[in-house]
Image 1 (cartoon, rainbow, N blue to C red):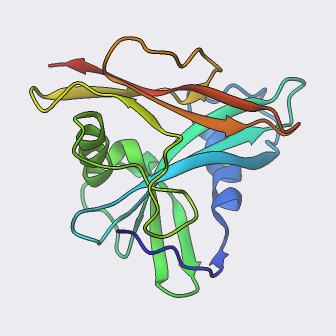
Image 2: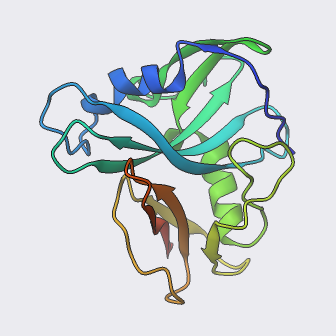
Length: 192
């Protein structure tokens, strides 16, 4: 299980995302400076215990209507070999673990493998800020252990009905800046 450290990161994750997010093709902002607030998410465990995995929701409040973004991230003790340049969100000095390389999780094979494991029912979502604590608010409409999966991450989140539906969906929640809770599809799969 992942250990959550109560420490500092310099720069913070939000500071790194403040620079990185507007450069992404899926960014829905108007090109101005985003105003990001942390709004939710969860973690997954790396079976090897080497890579931190977090699915963070941030809300950009700069626009007239706030926009929620899902950013899966990996935290590594060294650079990820072979990763494309756009995969690196940035580096940060962690108060306990030292220098961390923070990557967009869609480019990290450990993140994508664990997301597939979650959708197959072979991994348990973990609370975002508590060590060794499953997160019961994350709902997985899995597909079972058979088959290879292609997973599509919903980068711009939209509230959606989270009732029973087709298999191969990951549904979780976030909180809008006004305190309203929302749930939506974080990821969906297709079989290869």
